[in-house]
Image 1 (cartoon, rainbow, N blue to C red):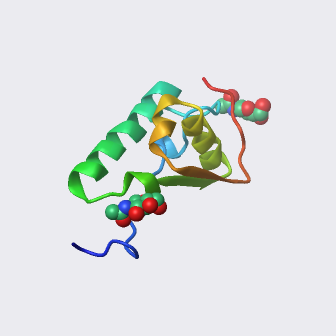
Image 2 (tube, rainbow, N blue to C red):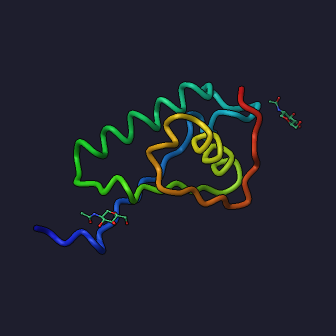
Length: 93
Ligand SMILES: *[C@@H]1O[C@H](CO)[C@@H](O)[C@H](O)[C@H]1NC(C)=O
Ligand SMILES: *[C@@H]1O[C@H](CO)[C@@H](O)[C@H](O)[C@H]1NC(C)=O
């Protein structure tokens, strides 16, 4: 069995138009961006061997605002933990 201990998959995304849903200048809605996260998880799991107990999300500023949105949505159950970094905790739109 392969040793996965030190292997990591890092995924960096930009929100549509450079901003995540939730702020007043985003191009996507919160449901659309949450669906993107769900689709991305499916794609990563289909392509790589992933330990589902070690999936994390973090972001900075507006990105972290969306991490907070993920954490409070059903798709958040896919993550082991979230790390907030200077989040701008946005209203859901
Ligand atoms: C977004 O909200 C900020 C803070 O209230 C405001 O300054 C800005 O003009 C708004 N932008 C848009 C595109 O509505
Ligand atoms: C998956 O992660 C959990 C939590 O860290 C760990 O207990 C478990 O051993 C890991 N499984 C594998 C196959 O590495």
